[in-house]
Length: 99
Image (cartoon, rainbow, N blue to C red; front, side, top):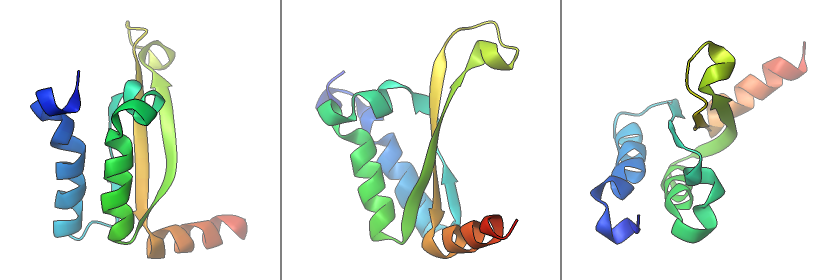
């Protein structure tokens, strides 16, 4: 759906703003694959990334998981963009690189 016609299109940015407000160290979102695959068309993920980057977060990774691969009955695929504050991301990567 077109973003101006669907009130749900603002949920990602609203969630990002809530994470900033509550001083979260990490943010894990869940959505349909089109959030990532069609971002060049709708820009919804880019908007979320922008809000979070402006507030000290980095996009660590995007998990792409298929329900059936984890025992589910559906072949539906979901994406899980994962963000951490720069401090947490730096700490995590330094700890991982030592092992």
